[in-house]
Amino acid sequence: MKIKKNDKVKIIAGKDKGKTGKVLRAIPDKDQLIVEGVNISKRHQRATQSNQKGQIIDKTMPIHISNAKKI
Image (tube, rainbow, N blue to C red; front, side, top):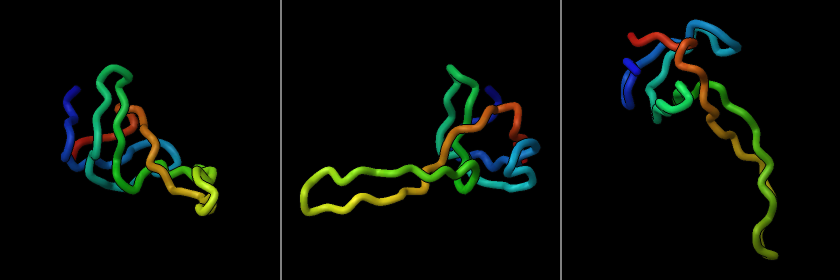
């Protein structure tokens, strides 16, 4: 992999095409990257204790390395 953690990348394909961001984590086994502010999905979290409430969390999901370009 030529792209590493803390590199700045530009997304060249997909729903977030044109966005730029910093690589938070590289997953070389699956050829994937986690880029901050890109490919955000909503995850529902259940209340883990009786005094807590359930909530919806925005989570950054990985993208394939072929959809990003180092800048």
